[in-house]
Length: 256
Image 1 (tube, rainbow, N blue to C red):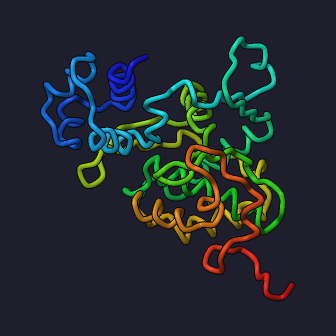
Image 2 (image 1 turned 90 degrees about the vertical axis):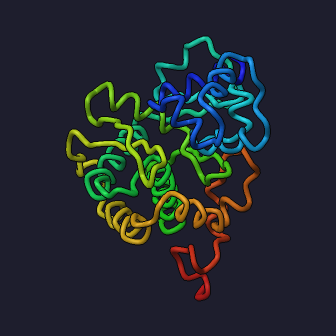
């Protein structure tokens, strides 16, 4: 798939009109049409803006085949696909992901700033804060480093499945004239799937960070050691949480 077709597919999946995408990038609507039809090239500045609109690394726009294949359950292993990276999410992690996501939506999802980008970062801090504090995984999702901050690789597959099961609904909105993907919960989370320590930590993250907008929480994530020590496009290592600075750390290492 060439770049123009890739942009068109992403635009349609996100419910963005050519006129709106053109306005964000700063070009005319006919220029967007020409790009999507392969009749016009995209310059570097335009490519950066397009990557920000769709919240994905430039490399992923140019090389979609490099994206890792996400396997949610063991039964999918038989599919004849050979990705560069294979991400397997066991059933227990999938259940946790779904219930934590529903918990977030029911608690703070109605706030106008809570779009997809903010949710990515909330999930990241929930996962990494819990791992640092208890040395065990909560969701255990895989987070990829990109210029917007940590992005959970499994997110799209999990959310597509939840939409299909009518557990959530995705809507296209605007936040200060920027396109925003929001999610509406169609059921309450099953709290029996979450431990008291997990709920306590999730509440802590939401209390600290859920009032931030997408730029604020992205900038905040960029100063966390796990993000700083990972290479662009690579999976962020959980073990790096034990080298966090005092501002981000969940533990007092001075007493050790």
